[in-house]
Figure (cartoon, rainbow, N blue to C red):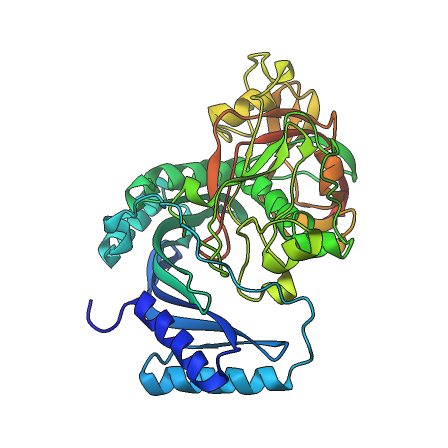
Length: 468
């Protein structure tokens, strides 16, 4: 690689701060080289293949009791100087920042999992092969979606002398198959592109689309549900952003009460950025590690960056993100685990109804088999928080809903709107089973993921059809 490394660039930024802001200026800089590629398909054909390679610089500066942040993508000497100059100028105009927590002291950074080089430098035809397999496995149904790869090399430096560097790589595939207006979905995220099986995903999406034909309307009400991993991912994302967020916790906008049994004993939630190919440090240079947020139903922690940790009288958990002063620290690599499906899911009855076909895998089928009457939900979308404190969320189902009767998936159901408190739905006694096989789901942006098995809940409040 020609030119200065990311760590050298970060060091140059810190040195420029010393020169232009004076010896009292405190600063940290993150330089990230990102190689992102996307192969998108619609109407069962690839219609877009894009790739970009960028270098971005983020600077945070504290000067004379005031804090400002800046960013740029011009990494020449003049470009870095301009970034520092405008950030210094901004700091002098900002209001005082009495909550400034100081900089991360020099500390060791843990070893991150090795990066799969084949994924980091994947070629378009490798993504296209998986798209082709997805389309072929759909058996003539119309398909759409994407396959993406991402590779990041990132470095951190601050004026306290702390430095860190690391790399990450990720691959993801998300696709639908459509038949007569009914969609089936399959999505997966992995450290290695080779672990994404386009044919498996395409066949699964197609089976769900065929099973979703001729849906019936159901009245609103409380239903027992089995959520597939794609739907569970939405629960984890909202729990992270609004519940286990140290800023919201400090502002008393979070449901979280560390030390209290707020969830069913079957629920354990761990944020584990190094359980996959993730960077070993956060936006403030703090070492990242696995953090248990919920253990066997009891809330144990919330995510902290340096600012929220200082307010709470504790230590950062390594969850600082860019823009954290606004958004707060976030756990973006959460994993749901716990006891496997309980006795209620072990009846062994078939889950294959005439209308449904092979709509679920064996792991989800074990949960479905214990449901006397309820709904199987593939996916949630357009979810919006109505009350952050209790985390009441409204949203819609999509990509397939089915009625379950006597442990059997009997027929498709029209999409429904719901209004539900996520913590309540996962509360003590409310989780009737977890699948044994966790599935990693991609976030809307790379660098975040949600890992969960299928989930059986005693009650979910559906408030009407998709139109209201």
